[in-house]
Length: 265
Image 1 (tube, helix red, strand yellow):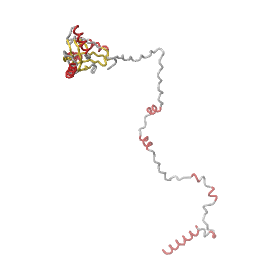
Image 2 (cartoon, one colour):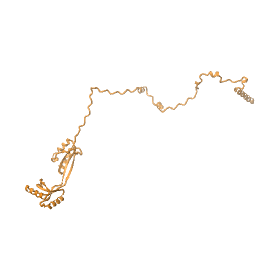
Image 3 (cartoon, helix red, strand yellow):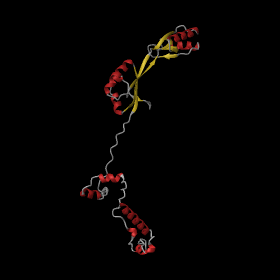
Image 4 (cartoon, one colour):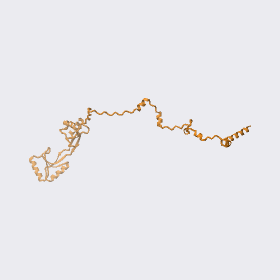
């Protein structure tokens, strides 16, 4: 029985295959043609047909800015309206009315005039008194200084002291010997004659030997001036008020007066 069933199935399949391939067309058993022109003409806009269950295309990656904006909170309607409204233009400054007074410029600081002044001829004792008095005036630092000038002693080959008649005779004798001289009038050596002036006592002794060899017998070495220190007060740049304060020191100036430095500092 099973063999008959299998045989029938094989025959049926063979007949179906022959029918689909058109081998039975001469017998009047041809398959229906699916590509006839009538069927093609009956189609309605086949180019716009699409599948209802077609797979959706993958979403394109969105830019980071879009993602950030999507995450940002949505502003309220009031804030959105305020942000959307254009900013009012800056108000232009109102022009000054003709009646407004022009602001006065700031006052200029007064110009302070300074000058250099000095007083000289102070000895060491007077300079010490001045050095104690000046700080009490409250002058600016560096506005005054004391400058020392040292001078050595002075020696002469000396003849004297003479009265007027004897002075004239001694001058005639020296002229005859061709020896130069000068007249001394200030005490303690005046009135007298100096036959040479020297900066040291040894040099004066040598000068005495020279005039003795020329015939002078009454000459000797004498000290005309002792070594000394002269102090000058210098005020390089002070105002008129500061100058008046210094001048008011009185006895501390030892009778000296301030005089201009002549433009020097």
